[in-house]
Length: 530
Image 1 (cartoon, rainbow, N blue to C red):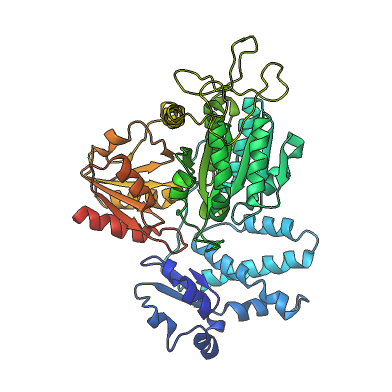
Image 2: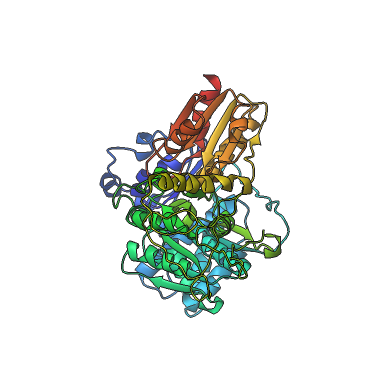
């Protein structure tokens, strides 16, 4: 952990790992700065940082000394001090400085003096760490063992946008996004708005309701229709999503979750929209719900959400979150030929007995007839439909029939999704259960615990409704089940409804922050002992 002042220590000390290293700018830790941050005495003693290796470095003054003759004002000079810390950390991890210098050359191409200044300070920090002999050791990070291919860095919002682009291309459909800007989902709208060269149509609506309604209209007209939002916007879209359920039109809703309720914590992550995604509409309104688990697989699940929506003629909610949306990771650019086909349920143009709600007997999916197809003219709307004909119907028996059909159609999706897999020890007593954006933290905690000699397994869910077909059989293999999520227990309650025969344990945090590996390890070890 690198802190430039006492306030930074106050805000971030919780993130330092046991036996970790803390580097601080000693120039900023004067009496005034310490008092202003809320400390009464030595901040390092108050935070109980015993066992932490604390490295004091006069970062500000050494940055000024390095750049005293370069011709920059003092404010600009101090802006370079982060590079001093980066130089120290680069030495600590035995990393070359080439990548940072290359970044300076691109970032400040029009300002050579800033390239020179940042490069000098970077080297100063590196040589300072090398000569002070304060570090007990340094570390070497080996190159990651990854599959060969062409890689780029990608965040969750960009990956989701590209996944829908890929799905539209695969299905032979035009992509339409009707959306209203909202943190942290706006990046999806911005990314797709820049892809007019690929035939994408985007509409920035005046509000959330207009955004989803334009998408429903585009779906009726034959486009792969998408709307993006966050929790407050999903609440506003609820009635229109119910319209998509009733009309049985394909629609993808991407909900990038944030802290709530109401305006809540717009820039913080949370997993608290799950129940809203499952049940946040009036009436019996079943819907398919998926969840991404890494920034890069937002691409895969945006593609799968689009495939399911089109092939099953249903709205699909894809849950992401602020952590995934803004988090980045290396992404291997995929070969789209390896992605499954998307079969559009077009009506047989030679059929003489076509009706708008005539269905496939196995899947309960109706066909997708769009305006402009002679002989396939029909109306859609929010009133209950007569089975087969699509006429408005108030017949009690028909309403019950259609309610069951819509539910059955969603549950039939389980035939087209993969079985749930586990990571870890199949003969363990304890099964850790997670979903969505907590994947990386759970895997890291699991790996460390298994390395310490404990047996434990992880089932991380991406398909929420319907759940994978083997979920019940998988749960039955384990004696204890610990569900970890960043809410008060929404997924565990979903599991209790579906599989009430198990006594689920819970680990919940709802601080607007991702899990930490240390917190997860403590919870898992406690449940291994109980």
